Length: 466
Image 1: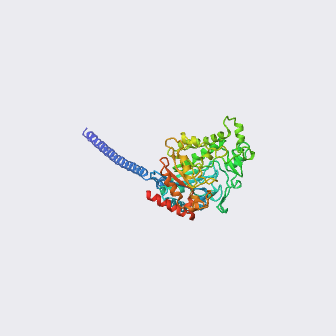
Image 2: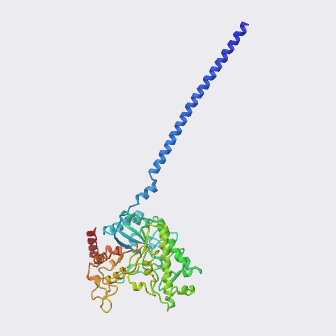
Image 3: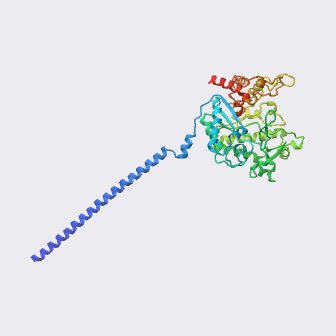
């Protein structure tokens, strides 16, 4: 009996040791598990913190594209007077290069030149012959930007021009000719070639104008008239195409304004079939309007469509037109066909207008009397036009005539005998309460020797006023 009890105690002791050992093992496992769990949690927290820090850095530090956008974004100064200059398609010729850095250097030089003259706005041709001075899905690259129509460049010329303009604090208006397709060569005063025009043959076959012209269904979208080709203003497809071009421009580029000049209908003669242009469309339309009013309606539809397109795309971008300065011609039944009175007095057409008053103070009629087109006479007529509230008016001035023997029915041309015409014109327009600035035609004349004194006089006058 005693021996049996001793064996039982021995077994119990062994079991106790096993139990204790088991408990110790379980405790060790638990401790190790807790350590591993704590270590894992610590790693997870560290990883979470790292991710949060990276996200914060990503938010606070823009990526390369954002940084580039930031570097090319400039806050323009507020201006109370527009002092502008037009940069025409033939001005682009001097910028032509396939090298991006060289182009940027040239573009910077243009903007520095404009800014150095105390001007604050530049109106740059971006669509002059149913083409574009930027990569476009609607029209080919301009020959004046690339050297050959339709040629692709490795960079975007317009984007660089806008960036360089903004660096100089200049407002940038994108300037379009709506209907022109081809044009004649430019000539100097003595008849020498100044620059080559655009011929039908050099337009690429995949251009929309060539496709339209070569299709039986859309052939009349493009009309041949008096030696050149034009888009047909009466065609809805043309109107929509122009609005699409403007939408593309405003969507993709940081422009302050969109601008059309005075090239609307060419001069027509409905008594001559060869010069009647879109008379065929008028006769087929069944319109109750006269043919002249019908044509004005066609242009107004385009203007109104472009205005609404600009505002729907970016309400901060303004839209304006620089019509010919002679109001009688604008209201003519044989040219332009612009309903200028409606555009100025009604909503939904324009934010600003720049009449091209390109005559001097002493412009004469053939009989020697002062012409209605003489500067002060013409300016007064424009100032007296009814205008809706908020519509701005600037005046286009003919810097390109300064120093030249321009026929004005004086025995000696005013433009060659005076060197202060532009500055006196600016002084005059500043006396008008409803005129808010001026624009010079053209950029290259800022450096032309014959206009040097006029440019200096204007610079000194504007500088004194700053």
